[in-house]
Length: 187
Image (tube, rainbow, N blue to C red):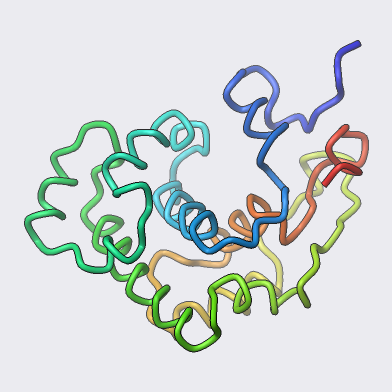
C-alpha cells in the first residue's frame, strides 16, 4: 500500500526521499545545521528541488560544508566557486556563505554550539503544527521573524524570515508534515 505523503513532495523521487528521510527530523548537530542554513540561503528565490539536485555539488564545492574552512575563504576561492557550474553562481550568496560561516563560529563561541543557540528559540523541542494541507502551511511566522532579526544582528546574511522558517522546517524545529502524512507522527 502506498504511503500518504505531504503533497509538495509527490512526483519526484529525490523529493520523496528527502521528505521521507530528512525533512522535519530534528537536527541537533552543528555541521548539519550549517549545511541546511547554507542550502536554504542558496534556495532563496529558487525551488528547493533545484538545490536538492545540486546538493552533492555544493558539498564538494564548499568542502563538505566545513564552516571552519569556509570562514577562511579568500577571494581566490570565491572566484573559483563563481565559476563552478555545479552550484548556484550568485556572488552575493557565495559571499554570504563565508560571512555566515564566520558568524556561525561566533555563535558557537558565545553559546557553546549553534544548536543550543537556535534550539533555545523553541525551548529545545519541536513545535508540532497540525496542518491538513499545503495551503495552510505559512511561509514564515512571528518566531521566524524573531530568529531572522537575531541572526541578522549577529552578522548573518540572506536569513530573512522565510529562509529561517524553511530552515526550521528542514531541521525539525517545527513539524509541518500534513497530519495525514505518514511522517507526521514519526518525527
